[in-house]
Length: 418
Ligand code: SF4
Image 1 (cartoon, rainbow, N blue to C red):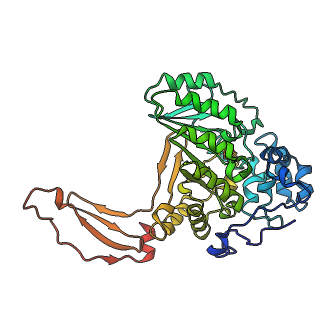
Image 2: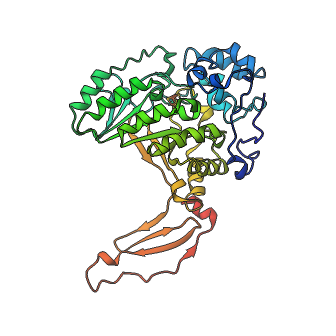
Image 3: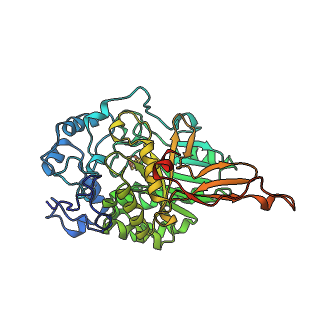
Protein backbone atom coordinates (compact mmCIF):
# COMPACT_ATOMS: atom_id res chain seq x y z
CA UNK A 1 0.00 0.00 0.00
CA UNK A 2 1.09 3.58 -0.46
CA UNK A 3 2.49 5.18 2.66
CA UNK A 4 2.61 8.85 3.60
CA UNK A 5 6.16 9.85 2.83
CA UNK A 6 6.18 13.15 4.65
CA UNK A 7 6.87 11.46 7.99
CA UNK A 8 4.89 14.24 9.62
CA UNK A 9 5.21 13.62 13.31
CA UNK A 10 6.48 15.75 16.10
CA UNK A 11 10.03 16.91 16.59
CA UNK A 12 12.81 15.89 16.45
CA UNK A 13 11.62 14.11 13.30
CA UNK A 14 9.18 16.75 12.04
CA UNK A 15 9.59 17.68 8.41
CA UNK A 16 9.60 21.31 7.40
CA UNK A 17 6.42 23.36 7.27
CA UNK A 18 6.29 23.40 3.48
CA UNK A 19 6.19 19.58 3.39
CA UNK A 20 3.49 19.51 6.05
CA UNK A 21 1.42 22.02 4.09
CA UNK A 22 1.42 20.04 0.85
CA UNK A 23 -1.97 18.67 -0.20
CA UNK A 24 -1.93 14.97 -1.11
CA UNK A 25 -4.67 12.57 -2.01
CA UNK A 26 -5.48 9.87 0.54
CA UNK A 27 -5.10 7.42 -2.36
CA UNK A 28 -6.63 3.96 -2.53
CA UNK A 29 -4.24 2.17 -0.18
CA UNK A 30 -5.22 -1.52 0.04
CA UNK A 31 -8.53 -0.86 -1.77
CA UNK A 32 -7.09 -0.70 -5.31
CA UNK A 33 -9.71 -3.01 -6.80
CA UNK A 34 -12.66 -0.91 -5.64
CA UNK A 35 -14.47 1.00 -8.39
CA UNK A 36 -14.38 4.81 -8.44
CA UNK A 37 -18.13 4.85 -7.94
CA UNK A 38 -17.87 2.80 -4.76
CA UNK A 39 -14.82 4.61 -3.40
CA UNK A 40 -16.48 8.00 -3.82
CA UNK A 41 -19.75 6.81 -2.29
CA UNK A 42 -19.92 7.79 1.39
CA UNK A 43 -22.18 4.85 2.14
CA UNK A 44 -19.57 2.45 0.71
CA UNK A 45 -16.93 4.13 2.89
CA UNK A 46 -19.13 3.69 5.97
CA UNK A 47 -19.96 0.09 5.15
CA UNK A 48 -16.29 -0.76 4.69
CA UNK A 49 -14.94 0.85 7.84
CA UNK A 50 -12.37 -1.05 9.82
CA UNK A 51 -14.14 -2.08 13.00
CA UNK A 52 -12.49 -5.33 14.13
CA UNK A 53 -9.03 -6.66 14.93
CA UNK A 54 -9.20 -9.09 12.02
CA UNK A 55 -9.99 -6.29 9.55
CA UNK A 56 -7.26 -4.09 10.98
CA UNK A 57 -4.60 -6.82 10.89
CA UNK A 58 -5.46 -7.54 7.29
CA UNK A 59 -4.44 -4.02 6.22
CA UNK A 60 -1.91 -3.38 8.97
CA UNK A 61 -0.15 -6.56 10.11
CA UNK A 62 2.48 -4.75 12.21
CA UNK A 63 0.32 -3.70 15.15
CA UNK A 64 2.12 -3.08 18.41
CA UNK A 65 1.19 -5.26 21.42
CA UNK A 66 -0.36 -2.15 23.06
CA UNK A 67 -2.54 -1.56 20.01
CA UNK A 68 -3.59 -5.20 19.69
CA UNK A 69 -4.64 -5.23 23.36
CA UNK A 70 -6.37 -1.88 22.89
CA UNK A 71 -8.44 -3.11 19.96
CA UNK A 72 -9.50 -6.16 22.00
CA UNK A 73 -10.80 -3.91 24.76
CA UNK A 74 -12.32 -1.16 22.61
CA UNK A 75 -15.74 -2.74 22.33
CA UNK A 76 -16.33 -2.28 26.05
CA UNK A 77 -15.29 1.38 26.14
CA UNK A 78 -15.27 3.27 22.84
CA UNK A 79 -15.65 1.26 19.66
CA UNK A 80 -13.03 1.34 16.93
CA UNK A 81 -14.07 2.51 13.48
CA UNK A 82 -11.81 3.91 10.75
CA UNK A 83 -13.00 4.87 7.27
CA UNK A 84 -10.87 3.58 4.37
CA UNK A 85 -10.18 7.22 3.41
CA UNK A 86 -8.78 8.07 6.84
CA UNK A 87 -6.95 4.77 7.20
CA UNK A 88 -4.90 5.63 4.13
CA UNK A 89 -3.40 8.59 5.98
CA UNK A 90 -1.80 6.27 8.53
CA UNK A 91 1.88 5.49 8.21
CA UNK A 92 1.66 1.78 8.96
CA UNK A 93 5.43 1.58 9.44
CA UNK A 94 5.49 4.25 12.14
CA UNK A 95 4.12 3.34 15.55
CA UNK A 96 4.17 7.05 16.47
CA UNK A 97 2.25 8.17 13.40
CA UNK A 98 0.09 11.13 14.47
CA UNK A 99 -2.91 9.84 12.52
CA UNK A 100 -2.59 6.34 13.95
CA UNK A 101 -2.53 7.65 17.53
CA UNK A 102 -5.88 9.33 17.03
CA UNK A 103 -7.96 6.35 15.89
CA UNK A 104 -6.26 3.07 16.80
CA UNK A 105 -7.06 2.05 20.38
CA UNK A 106 -4.21 1.40 22.79
CA UNK A 107 -4.06 -0.56 26.01
CA UNK A 108 -3.35 2.66 27.94
CA UNK A 109 -7.01 3.60 27.49
CA UNK A 110 -7.81 1.21 30.31
CA UNK A 111 -5.58 3.13 32.77
CA UNK A 112 -7.67 5.72 34.56
CA UNK A 113 -6.15 8.42 36.75
CA UNK A 114 -7.99 9.44 39.92
CA UNK A 115 -8.80 12.90 38.50
CA UNK A 116 -10.09 11.66 35.17
CA UNK A 117 -13.82 11.63 34.50
CA UNK A 118 -16.26 9.89 32.19
CA UNK A 119 -18.14 13.18 31.67
CA UNK A 120 -15.38 15.78 32.12
CA UNK A 121 -17.46 18.74 30.90
CA UNK A 122 -20.35 17.94 33.23
CA UNK A 123 -22.79 17.73 30.32
CA UNK A 124 -25.14 15.24 31.93
CA UNK A 125 -25.62 17.57 34.90
CA UNK A 126 -26.71 20.37 32.54
CA UNK A 127 -29.11 18.28 30.49
CA UNK A 128 -32.76 19.31 31.00
CA UNK A 129 -34.05 16.73 28.48
CA UNK A 130 -32.25 13.76 26.88
CA UNK A 131 -29.80 14.88 24.21
CA UNK A 132 -29.83 18.59 25.10
CA UNK A 133 -27.14 20.41 27.11
CA UNK A 134 -27.98 23.90 28.35
CA UNK A 135 -24.85 25.16 30.05
CA UNK A 136 -24.46 28.72 28.70
CA UNK A 137 -27.17 31.39 28.93
CA UNK A 138 -28.15 31.85 25.28
CA UNK A 139 -27.18 28.64 23.52
CA UNK A 140 -27.67 24.89 23.67
CA UNK A 141 -25.86 21.81 22.52
CA UNK A 142 -28.25 19.54 20.61
CA UNK A 143 -26.95 15.96 20.41
CA UNK A 144 -28.47 14.21 17.42
CA UNK A 145 -26.80 10.81 17.37
CA UNK A 146 -24.22 8.69 19.16
CA UNK A 147 -22.56 7.58 15.90
CA UNK A 148 -19.49 8.97 14.13
CA UNK A 149 -17.76 8.00 10.90
CA UNK A 150 -14.65 7.13 12.93
CA UNK A 151 -13.97 7.27 16.65
CA UNK A 152 -11.33 9.52 18.19
CA UNK A 153 -9.58 7.85 21.09
CA UNK A 154 -9.68 11.05 23.19
CA UNK A 155 -13.37 11.83 22.56
CA UNK A 156 -14.83 13.89 25.36
CA UNK A 157 -18.17 12.13 24.82
CA UNK A 158 -16.74 8.64 24.74
CA UNK A 159 -19.20 7.75 27.52
CA UNK A 160 -21.94 7.84 24.89
CA UNK A 161 -20.55 7.84 21.34
CA UNK A 162 -20.50 4.39 19.74
CA UNK A 163 -22.60 3.09 22.64
CA UNK A 164 -19.84 0.61 23.54
CA UNK A 165 -20.08 1.23 27.27
CA UNK A 166 -23.87 0.81 27.46
CA UNK A 167 -24.83 4.48 27.99
CA UNK A 168 -27.92 3.87 25.84
CA UNK A 169 -28.13 7.34 24.37
CA UNK A 170 -31.71 8.08 23.28
CA UNK A 171 -32.16 11.63 21.97
CA UNK A 172 -35.76 12.71 21.62
CA UNK A 173 -36.02 15.39 18.95
CA UNK A 174 -39.58 16.32 19.96
CA UNK A 175 -38.57 16.98 23.57
CA UNK A 176 -35.36 18.75 22.56
CA UNK A 177 -37.19 21.07 20.15
CA UNK A 178 -39.99 21.70 22.62
CA UNK A 179 -37.46 22.76 25.28
CA UNK A 180 -35.83 25.23 22.87
CA UNK A 181 -39.23 26.62 21.79
CA UNK A 182 -40.14 27.18 25.44
CA UNK A 183 -36.90 29.07 26.24
CA UNK A 184 -36.79 32.38 24.37
CA UNK A 185 -33.31 33.11 25.72
CA UNK A 186 -31.90 30.40 23.42
CA UNK A 187 -30.72 32.10 20.23
CA UNK A 188 -27.97 29.68 19.17
CA UNK A 189 -28.28 25.91 18.63
CA UNK A 190 -25.21 23.75 18.07
CA UNK A 191 -25.95 20.35 16.54
CA UNK A 192 -23.38 17.78 17.54
CA UNK A 193 -23.17 14.23 18.78
CA UNK A 194 -21.88 11.93 17.48
CA UNK A 195 -21.81 13.44 14.04
CA UNK A 196 -24.92 15.21 12.68
CA UNK A 197 -23.76 14.80 9.07
CA UNK A 198 -24.26 11.04 9.41
CA UNK A 199 -28.00 11.70 9.28
CA UNK A 200 -29.58 11.44 5.84
CA UNK A 201 -30.17 14.72 4.00
CA UNK A 202 -33.89 14.29 4.59
CA UNK A 203 -33.62 13.72 8.33
CA UNK A 204 -31.09 16.50 8.90
CA UNK A 205 -33.07 18.88 6.67
CA UNK A 206 -36.24 18.08 8.61
CA UNK A 207 -34.51 18.83 11.91
CA UNK A 208 -33.06 22.11 10.65
CA UNK A 209 -36.48 23.12 9.30
CA UNK A 210 -38.07 22.60 12.72
CA UNK A 211 -35.33 24.58 14.45
CA UNK A 212 -35.54 27.43 11.93
CA UNK A 213 -39.28 27.64 12.59
CA UNK A 214 -38.59 28.74 16.18
CA UNK A 215 -38.60 32.55 15.98
CA UNK A 216 -35.96 33.22 18.67
CA UNK A 217 -33.41 30.80 17.20
CA UNK A 218 -31.12 33.17 15.34
CA UNK A 219 -28.11 31.05 14.64
CA UNK A 220 -27.47 27.40 13.81
CA UNK A 221 -24.19 25.56 14.04
CA UNK A 222 -23.07 22.04 13.21
CA UNK A 223 -20.01 20.42 14.80
CA UNK A 224 -18.68 17.66 12.56
CA UNK A 225 -15.61 15.63 11.73
CA UNK A 226 -17.24 14.15 8.62
CA UNK A 227 -15.42 16.40 6.11
CA UNK A 228 -12.14 14.99 7.50
CA UNK A 229 -13.09 11.33 8.06
CA UNK A 230 -15.52 11.00 5.17
CA UNK A 231 -15.19 13.84 2.63
CA UNK A 232 -17.37 11.85 0.19
CA UNK A 233 -20.37 12.71 2.40
CA UNK A 234 -20.12 16.40 1.44
CA UNK A 235 -22.20 15.98 -1.68
CA UNK A 236 -23.65 18.82 -3.79
CA UNK A 237 -27.11 17.71 -2.62
CA UNK A 238 -26.10 18.02 1.05
CA UNK A 239 -24.63 21.48 0.44
CA UNK A 240 -27.75 22.61 -1.45
CA UNK A 241 -29.89 21.48 1.48
CA UNK A 242 -27.69 23.16 4.13
CA UNK A 243 -27.59 26.51 2.37
CA UNK A 244 -31.35 26.92 2.92
CA UNK A 245 -30.77 27.42 6.64
CA UNK A 246 -28.45 30.41 6.87
CA UNK A 247 -27.05 31.75 9.07
CA UNK A 248 -25.55 28.30 9.50
CA UNK A 249 -21.93 27.84 10.56
CA UNK A 250 -19.95 24.60 10.58
CA UNK A 251 -17.08 23.73 12.90
CA UNK A 252 -14.87 20.95 11.63
CA UNK A 253 -12.29 19.09 13.69
CA UNK A 254 -8.76 18.68 12.35
CA UNK A 255 -5.69 17.96 14.43
CA UNK A 256 -2.81 17.41 12.02
CA UNK A 257 -2.00 18.96 8.64
CA UNK A 258 -1.85 15.54 7.00
CA UNK A 259 -5.62 15.22 7.55
CA UNK A 260 -6.14 18.03 5.03
CA UNK A 261 -5.97 15.97 1.86
CA UNK A 262 -6.98 17.10 -1.62
CA UNK A 263 -10.31 15.31 -1.11
CA UNK A 264 -10.89 17.16 2.17
CA UNK A 265 -9.93 20.49 0.60
CA UNK A 266 -12.52 19.91 -2.15
CA UNK A 267 -15.21 18.92 0.36
CA UNK A 268 -14.53 22.05 2.42
CA UNK A 269 -14.67 24.17 -0.74
CA UNK A 270 -18.13 22.77 -1.51
CA UNK A 271 -19.32 23.83 1.95
CA UNK A 272 -17.67 27.25 1.65
CA UNK A 273 -19.21 27.74 -1.81
CA UNK A 274 -22.60 27.09 -0.20
CA UNK A 275 -21.93 30.21 1.86
CA UNK A 276 -21.24 28.33 5.09
CA UNK A 277 -18.61 29.99 7.30
CA UNK A 278 -16.17 27.28 8.41
CA UNK A 279 -14.16 27.11 11.62
CA UNK A 280 -11.85 24.45 12.97
CA UNK A 281 -11.50 22.96 16.42
CA UNK A 282 -8.32 21.09 17.28
CA UNK A 283 -7.54 19.11 20.39
CA UNK A 284 -4.00 19.47 21.66
CA UNK A 285 -2.66 15.90 21.59
CA UNK A 286 0.65 14.49 22.67
CA UNK A 287 2.83 13.33 19.78
CA UNK A 288 0.12 14.41 17.35
CA UNK A 289 0.16 18.20 17.24
CA UNK A 290 1.94 19.39 20.41
CA UNK A 291 4.60 20.91 18.26
CA UNK A 292 4.79 24.55 17.08
CA UNK A 293 5.89 23.54 13.57
CA UNK A 294 3.04 21.08 13.15
CA UNK A 295 0.44 23.45 14.60
CA UNK A 296 1.57 26.40 12.53
CA UNK A 297 1.43 24.28 9.38
CA UNK A 298 -2.06 23.12 10.38
CA UNK A 299 -3.51 26.59 10.95
CA UNK A 300 -1.98 27.97 7.75
CA UNK A 301 -3.21 25.00 5.76
CA UNK A 302 -6.70 25.47 7.20
CA UNK A 303 -6.77 29.01 5.81
CA UNK A 304 -5.82 27.57 2.41
CA UNK A 305 -8.96 25.43 2.78
CA UNK A 306 -11.04 28.55 3.65
CA UNK A 307 -11.39 27.40 7.25
CA UNK A 308 -10.73 29.78 10.14
CA UNK A 309 -8.89 28.13 13.05
CA UNK A 310 -11.30 28.67 15.95
CA UNK A 311 -10.27 26.73 19.05
CA UNK A 312 -7.40 24.65 20.31
CA UNK A 313 -8.80 22.61 23.18
CA UNK A 314 -6.70 21.41 26.02
CA UNK A 315 -7.54 17.68 25.97
CA UNK A 316 -10.27 17.04 28.54
CA UNK A 317 -9.35 14.70 31.42
CA UNK A 318 -11.41 11.94 29.87
CA UNK A 319 -10.85 8.56 31.51
CA UNK A 320 -7.96 6.69 29.87
CA UNK A 321 -6.57 9.61 27.85
CA UNK A 322 -3.38 10.41 29.80
CA UNK A 323 -1.15 9.02 27.04
CA UNK A 324 -2.68 11.51 24.60
CA UNK A 325 -2.73 14.62 26.76
CA UNK A 326 -0.11 17.32 26.29
CA UNK A 327 0.68 19.82 29.03
CA UNK A 328 -0.88 23.28 29.32
CA UNK A 329 2.68 24.64 29.33
CA UNK A 330 3.14 23.13 25.89
CA UNK A 331 -0.14 24.64 24.72
CA UNK A 332 0.97 28.09 25.88
CA UNK A 333 4.30 27.69 24.07
CA UNK A 334 2.40 26.86 20.89
CA UNK A 335 0.17 29.92 21.26
CA UNK A 336 3.28 32.02 21.85
CA UNK A 337 4.72 30.62 18.61
CA UNK A 338 1.59 31.60 16.65
CA UNK A 339 0.51 35.01 17.93
CA UNK A 340 2.32 37.69 15.94
CA UNK A 341 4.30 35.09 14.01
CA UNK A 342 1.53 34.33 11.54
CA UNK A 343 -1.71 35.85 10.21
CA UNK A 344 -4.13 36.79 12.98
CA UNK A 345 -6.93 34.85 11.23
CA UNK A 346 -4.79 31.73 11.62
CA UNK A 347 -4.48 32.08 15.40
CA UNK A 348 -7.14 30.11 17.29
CA UNK A 349 -8.18 30.62 20.90
CA UNK A 350 -6.63 28.11 23.29
CA UNK A 351 -9.23 26.99 25.86
CA UNK A 352 -9.60 24.64 28.78
CA UNK A 353 -13.10 23.28 29.23
CA UNK A 354 -13.25 23.65 33.00
CA UNK A 355 -13.66 20.15 34.46
CA UNK A 356 -17.02 19.59 36.11
CA UNK A 357 -19.03 21.89 33.85
CA UNK A 358 -17.43 25.33 34.17
CA UNK A 359 -17.43 25.91 30.44
CA UNK A 360 -14.63 27.06 28.14
CA UNK A 361 -12.01 29.27 29.74
CA UNK A 362 -9.56 31.08 27.42
CA UNK A 363 -5.92 30.50 28.30
CA UNK A 364 -3.31 32.87 26.87
CA UNK A 365 0.34 33.69 27.25
CA UNK A 366 0.65 36.87 29.33
CA UNK A 367 0.83 40.01 27.21
CA UNK A 368 -0.33 42.50 29.86
CA UNK A 369 2.60 42.86 32.25
CA UNK A 370 1.07 45.39 34.62
CA UNK A 371 -1.80 47.82 34.79
CA UNK A 372 -2.93 50.74 36.92
CA UNK A 373 -5.34 53.66 36.54
CA UNK A 374 -2.89 55.54 34.28
CA UNK A 375 -1.34 52.98 32.07
CA UNK A 376 -1.04 49.44 30.83
CA UNK A 377 2.36 47.85 30.35
CA UNK A 378 2.29 45.32 27.54
CA UNK A 379 4.76 43.25 25.63
CA UNK A 380 4.58 42.21 22.01
CA UNK A 381 5.33 38.90 20.31
CA UNK A 382 9.04 39.81 20.13
CA UNK A 383 9.24 40.47 23.86
CA UNK A 384 9.46 44.26 23.44
CA UNK A 385 7.79 46.15 26.27
CA UNK A 386 5.52 49.14 25.72
CA UNK A 387 3.39 51.44 27.84
CA UNK A 388 -0.09 52.50 26.79
CA UNK A 389 -1.07 55.72 28.57
CA UNK A 390 -4.78 55.90 29.40
CA UNK A 391 -4.85 59.71 29.70
CA UNK A 392 -7.54 60.02 27.02
CA UNK A 393 -10.22 59.02 29.50
CA UNK A 394 -8.91 61.40 32.19
CA UNK A 395 -10.02 65.02 32.84
CA UNK A 396 -8.48 67.90 30.87
CA UNK A 397 -5.09 68.80 32.34
CA UNK A 398 -4.47 65.29 33.62
CA UNK A 399 -0.86 64.14 33.62
CA UNK A 400 0.27 60.55 34.05
CA UNK A 401 2.01 60.05 37.38
CA UNK A 402 5.21 58.70 35.89
CA UNK A 403 7.21 59.57 32.83
CA UNK A 404 6.85 57.35 29.79
CA UNK A 405 9.59 54.77 29.55
CA UNK A 406 11.21 53.92 26.26
CA UNK A 407 10.33 50.42 25.02
CA UNK A 408 12.76 47.75 26.00
CA UNK A 409 13.25 44.18 24.92
CA UNK A 410 12.73 41.33 27.36
CA UNK A 411 15.06 38.39 27.22
CA UNK A 412 13.26 35.39 25.70
CA UNK A 413 13.60 33.47 28.97
CA UNK A 414 11.96 36.34 30.83
CA UNK A 415 9.10 36.46 28.36
CA UNK A 416 8.43 32.79 28.89
CA UNK A 417 8.33 33.17 32.68
CA UNK A 418 5.65 35.86 32.52
S1 SF4 B 1 -15.83 12.81 15.74
FE1 SF4 B 1 -16.19 14.09 17.56
S2 SF4 B 1 -17.87 13.07 18.66
FE2 SF4 B 1 -17.03 11.60 17.18
S3 SF4 B 1 -15.49 10.41 18.29
FE3 SF4 B 1 -14.42 12.12 17.30
S4 SF4 B 1 -14.38 13.75 18.87
FE4 SF4 B 1 -15.97 12.26 19.49
